[in-house]
Length: 380
Image (cartoon, rainbow, N blue to C red; front, top):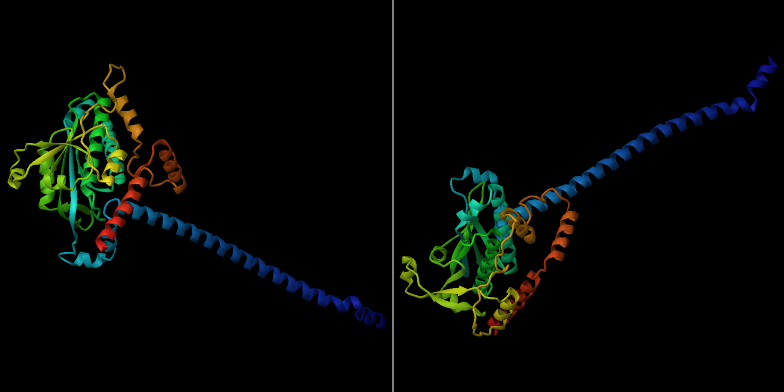
């Protein structure tokens, strides 16, 4: 009996409850820590997914904004954001975002003998060629600070002097027309359709611009001056830029100008002569320099040589020539890059810039200097 009492009073039996208690506490702590670790891992995963989705949302918003800005100007886009869809659906008439612009130049262009080009190419090749052609026009318009309104089939028209005012809008529209004539000459040389040409009309005046529609928005311009510019294109001559006297009086560059004759009733009602600007061998940069120098000089010879030289017999098909010409312009298929990463777009832009020199920055810099000097002269 005394021996059992001594065993129970030994140090081992007195420490066992403490070990048991510590073991239970440690087990509970391990369970709680593992649960907290799982919770922290789950929270970290959710935070990472939330950050990833936020970046994707920002990219989608950026792409949507870029797509919307390609349809309507940024100024009207900001006004349109304030419209409430619920209120618009209830109203019988919604607010019209219309702006008036004074002293702008309007250019209308139309492809002459477009049906002959359609007969030479298949439907797919024709659409691809038009996409490349209009993309080339858009690049030239961006360089010359012109805003493309839209194109209807083989008709293409732009405006210079809006939404940002610029004093040399008439020269920019004429330069745009001359570049379009050079481009269509390249297509004519590649396809062999000698009757293919570009008929262009330019007029200076005021316009109303805005967007129409609730769902499918349409940006356009309206005024009598727009109608007159369209008539100038209709009454023009293929391979030349047909301008009104009002536009001619605003030109400061060096051009080969001859007086034109028109039988259009609306043009005859003006009681003023119209003029044709013939293409020559002067490059875009040389012409732009002459505009900003504001110095006129006489042009003795107005060449109309082909851009690609005389046509020579070749076994290359028209389809191959058009494809090579389109590749040299390097236009992208609409919405082809909507799913690519920005890194891929940056690399494509870098490759495109290495392949073709970019004169847009030079023209934009000269535009900023010109506007600054113009503001200083007005303030004095």
